[in-house]
Amino acid sequence: MATLGIDFGTSNTAAGVLQGGKPQLISVEPGQTTLPTSVFFDYDRKETTYGSVANAALIDGREGRFMRALKSVLGTPLMREKRQIAYERLTLIEVVARFLAMLRERAEAETGAHFDVALSGRPVRFHSTDAARNAQAELDLREAYMIAGYSDVSFMFEPEAAALASGPLAKGELGLVVDIGGGTSDFSIFARDGAATQIIASNGVRVGGTDFDRAISITEVMPLLGRGAEIRNALGQGRHVAPNAIFNDLATWQKIPFVYTQENRLMAADFAKLGVEPALFGRLKTVLEMELGHDIAFAVEAGKIAINHPDATRAGIDLGLIETQLAAQITKSAMSAALADHAGQIAACAQQTLEMAEVGADRIGKIVFVGGSSLLQVVEDVMVAMFPHAALERAEAFTAVADGLAIAAARDLPR
Image (cartoon, rainbow, N blue to C red):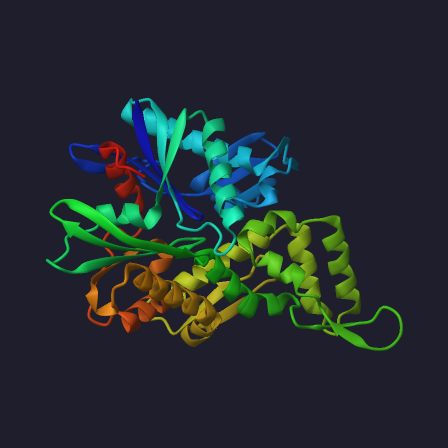
């Protein structure tokens, strides 16, 4: 009975097995060991595509329904609502199941093995404070694996998997995994005794890269679509500020597919007629009519990555699909301000992990950065401030969890 290690991520996914005593990642896309956790239902071709192909279909403007960040919806009632998605009526659990089935097929095609069991990574907490929703999220994901054709699935905390795959520790020191994914931030403090890895404490908070994107979008992009702008009252004198809900949803990856309602389109048209600055709401109207929410989200993500470059002082967020030459500008200080609350939550969770382990910050000799969002300067600044003497390890930030899951699956570790 072969077991496939699967790092099913909010933004990206990877899978691996152990070969020759070393983790071997699956080529989940041609020449790539990670693929975007994206799904596109093509209206015209009546087919479903995944990963980079799904992203390309959206960017090319094909007619269909694009979905990303579905992991963030696990545990919520949305997962079990049957809805019309392009040419089919499906639940989001079934959408996730199709993605997981595709992953299995590609792994079997590459290895020649039959994978009927999965060892799946999961965040320490899908949801920060709601125990019932946390439990439901794992149940939802388990059901998706069953629908995808697996006979069984076990779960392992993602930062604990990454600890298995991390480099050596000096004698007597402890390591800290800082795993900042698309939807959650997770921490594990670990020790080494020879080849054995001992997990001392794990903790997590529901803050991740998609939250960073949302914060940047709300502060830098949504004002260009009317957020914070005034609208004249339809009857009588007076004005009021445009409600935030539509802008907040447009800035949230997992909510974007559900904003294109007739009600929202009519609301945007009214705003464009009554707005004190009608051009702003005209852009909002265009975004809803042309379904450009995900294009904005990708542009924000690209701007976030660009401004994070050490030499960058300013980066553009290209909004030319909405209006010719339209762009938002972001600076390093603006990004730091937008992400300050999230950075504070990450620092607080790291501190709680220390307290759970009953160790001081001086005991941490190495910080292992995992997940694409862990490479943001704001995250490094927080960790360096807390652990000024710790060495920093970033070698396998994008694949460390999948490597660790491959190791754990082969060893049949208790979990």
